[in-house]
Length: 326
Image 1 (tube, rainbow, N blue to C red):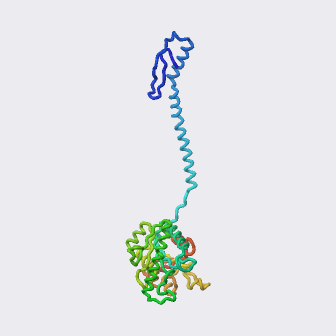
Image 2 (image 1 turned 135 degrees about the vertical axis):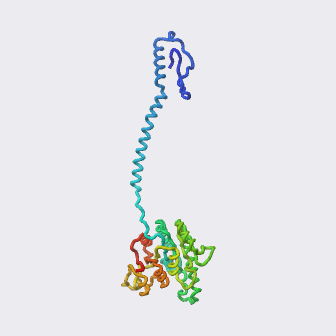
Image 3 (image 1 turned 180 degrees about the horizontal axis):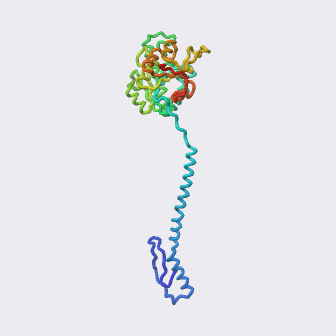
């Protein structure tokens, strides 16, 4: 790559043609050598190899990116088509108070706390909570101690009721543990102060827990004897401004007789508070029914043993029986 004047060399760093040394004059070269030197010199000056490569890259790179964009667009469209999700159903009730009797925790064993049963309840509550529903729960204690109604055990009514309240605290702690194992933040609020195991019930604090998306479990009933946990559930529902009270039972709703003992018992899909009181139906005790009637609080009675019933009720499906003002 030499000429009669100089040998040009392309410097990649400075991008300048340098003259390292001079060659002999043209008259001292042969004709073939002189022609070859001139030809190589002109090709170097007009089309440097690296510049040709750079030009090819400038033309090729945009095409590569265009192809990548097309492929990504097709891939994104395919993913959207495959992962197209159905919009979640809006819950009919935004804030509920769920009344769980102590018998709901005992499962098939007939007493105490059955692990699989309480875990199933926690799993179902988690599904309802994921809909954005604010959940407060009033638990009973009949699976551990039934207060003055305890068979074969004569005890003062007030003392027995206090013992039953302590049983509800045990159930509340068990349910809290099951819910938190499922990743649901839960708070136990007790009507009887016991700082080491539960928060004291304060209405504004309970309301704040619900607003933060925590499940609130009410324990120890109202904190007073002669009042059942049904009455406590009605009272807490009024205080929390709940939309409905959900009463979980072992049967499908309200009947005029015990369906487990009377085969042809009449089922009520919808009934008023006054009819419940006049017919003496065992939905909730009369104090709780009267409190709900005075404040217009609807009650839905359903079968807890059917999985998914809580979610169906919350979404507004017709499940069980409904107690309304008229």
